[in-house]
Image 1 (spheres, helix red, strand yellow):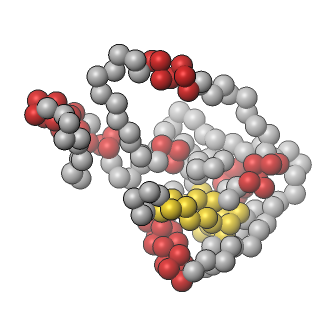
Image 2: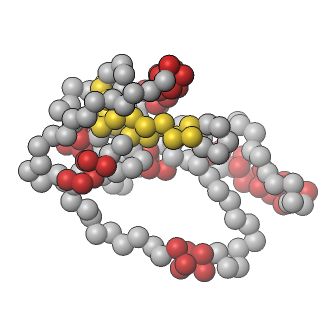
Image 3: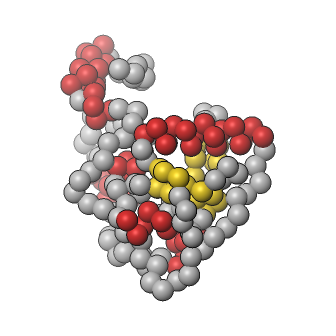
Length: 175
């Protein structure tokens, strides 16, 4: 199990309780996100023609980072090699801690996709619900990778790197 970094502002008993919860629910805190079987994500592009972009120019260091990310995500089963007519470029976005977000530029795909009108919760209402919370936590669990794509959406999720074309098996960030 990975070590959990806890704030030093927590008391000894609080730290112990959180560690116990993390131990009990260790599978939920896995570095490899699981999959839901309750829903699939679809991408409705109507009668739009496939959008195929070229990969963006990246530095040799970025190419190394992309290869490393691709290998990690391939091993998790979240992507697979593709022959799709759809291809969006990869974008590496730096995080404040020096790590990178491995993202795709899906602007053009999103522009031809029909939006679902599922209501997004208002931020002020969500914060209001936290009003009496004793603890607030942030987790980066790649939750969007836990929703599988339906078969037609997989090909639309295609992304191009300097090496080859891949597609997602799960909902990628940015769609």
